[in-house]
Image (cartoon, rainbow, N blue to C red; front, side, top):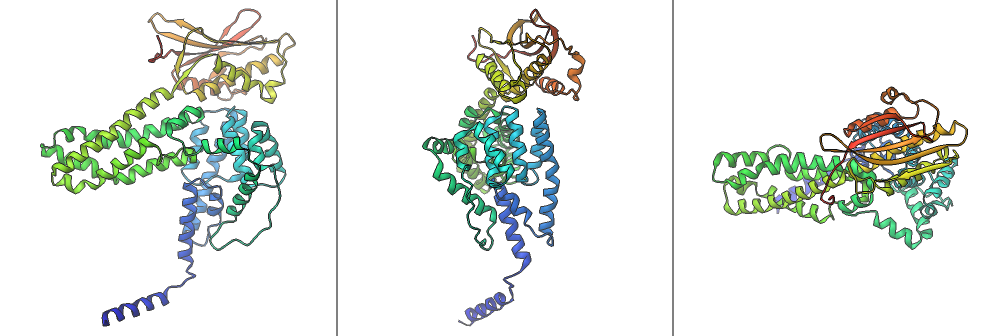
Length: 495
């Protein structure tokens, strides 16, 4: 009884010495909320970071990272506007540091729109309107979003300003803005829009791949990192030791590979978080069946360390089963990525490119006598991400249309794809953009990154995939053609 009394007195003294208004404690709690909001992709994350007190070391670090990330975000937006494939790299460097300033959502949306990334553009328009529901720029964003997606724009049509209530302690005013916008939007959402809203969130990785080609490069990088760093380097490399557990040297290697360095569960969660940061809430790997099974296998292996160290037959059997599960995920991901980069060159692709370019203000204003499109007669596949191939072709086609627009009528443009047999027996896919412009295009400037309409940037993108780009004379009524060429890829569907 005396001991209990002493503990109670000590606890009371300890509590009396704790300052409930300790700024250091509040700052740490605020920082934890800010980081979690960023990791979850919440709209108010930037505001929480910005509100950090610079009189504290944590606050100064938050502001330093915001300032460090901002130039990368701005560079990424500008590169995307120019059609430079390096835009992804610049934006990714910003994402590694801190949340994006919400004021950049509007220029980012416009850059995506101009590059034909309509889904991404609509997303950033909505993010901008969530953060800035009022003002001239908000009005402009509504008009532009309405052109892309009238139904989604309906969510943001109501601009009634809600009375400002004082924020509750620890709550961000950004949250009130977000709730107000969403409540107003729910009243105007149609059933079709609601269904589409939920279909695009929390889907499996395979579903996201099927419906969103603009994410293919990012998904390929994330999957490649997961496979190389965890599934192959740590799990896969232990396969030989699992099959030969009687060998003490191999068993020691197994323990070191599985349990040395970063804990397995922590490494697995870090990869899942990388997917979440890059793809937002479109994909939920915790609900993806294959990833869920793999996560359970990772946790089982983590719990087996003591049993494996002691050579327990049961632990080794459980390890072998878990290893099989993870190697199955690795095979599934390998198949996914193998198909991911492959693009079918057909009429649908070429017509999409032509439609998106003609939908742009500048290229759409040019009157053409003909814009001919001709696809190959047989199935043709390239090992090029579809989003990148579309971007490359749009730049070349846009350049051709603007060039013929400087000449008097008649103005002719043609987009086609042909096969050419090489002496080695390989086939080359030549995608050609013909134009009737009298303006000369020196092949040398294709490799100059300063070329005004971005063909130098296109050349850099083509070369990354092992392709070539050149300018050739063309038959009447055309003057020349820009040709990009890649080796044809054959897969299981090809005869």
